[in-house]
View 1: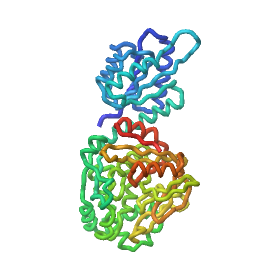
View 2: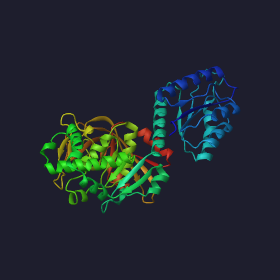
View 3: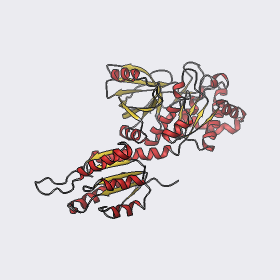
View 4: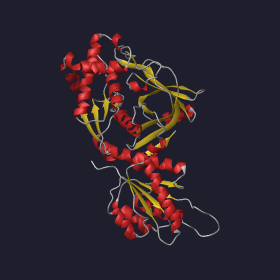
Length: 446
């Protein structure tokens, strides 16, 4: 696997104020270096086509940051676009001095020249930022675009497994392997849930002891579960864990009801919770796009995310409660209660997770959705996870929305979104917006 690479490509011509340009060149390298240690930089500003080509010959970028260090005509950006299809951030520099004298850089005119060419080459699919290297919003934009490009690259290396079929009436989560590969670059495989159930049934108690201890070490109340259910959890956890580890799988969408209640006698909920804390994105009800959404949030933040249904709204508080039966990662539990163990709210069989999720000042609610015509879209909403106790049996998180909750619910229902959403414990809205652009996926902000 080649190392991820961010290429800084400062284009211009030598007829402008090169002393000013050199200052911006050095500051820009410092700014990009502060964001990523995976940058490659030219030794000097690229002020001729020959200099540009010499630099381009030695790089293989996953993200190109093309900056008009001064004005440059469209021949410069054309050389970049002929060689590379990676995501591109076009960066315009602010004029360093406006004093009635000489135009130092003329970067903005160069940006229009480059953007006009980008429209022809890529139908306008690029990211853009205007500003000086030290400006906070410029730094934030570079951070977001770098993260999005890294996630796009990671998706090409993702192996996602659909374990079992969606239940009747839950077809919104069903995916085709060719769609996943074509749009997201994701390799998807499928396996029947009964195969893992059969593997689980074949294990001895001794083989599964350590798997039971793992859950005991991160949860509370497991001893209240019937011994059979404790042992069956350990068997099932071993089956799932060995399957994902041995096959290099980083995300799964797992069937849950009714099979694990009727055929195995113990739910898969706590198993999925453990996998989520392992860094394996694990959705239930066989929601492939839910698992993909989880993976994206986990890959960007490096921590577990919440998967659940919007089940309640409070117009006065402007909150939406997201809930599910009990698959949330133990690391998401409120510190005061910890990750409690309970039983499934409908089937009354455990172990499942039982807790309210921890608060967070900035969260992002996200979903990879699919429209009626088969094209994809991203749901994006910013909010705050409040310090609220468990709202219903299972696991829950209460999100205070930036946009009035009533408007969010009314509009998202009218727009026909699927009933599963992801709550990401960080503000990554800009990163996911950039990723949507890179993938040619519609971004819907609420």
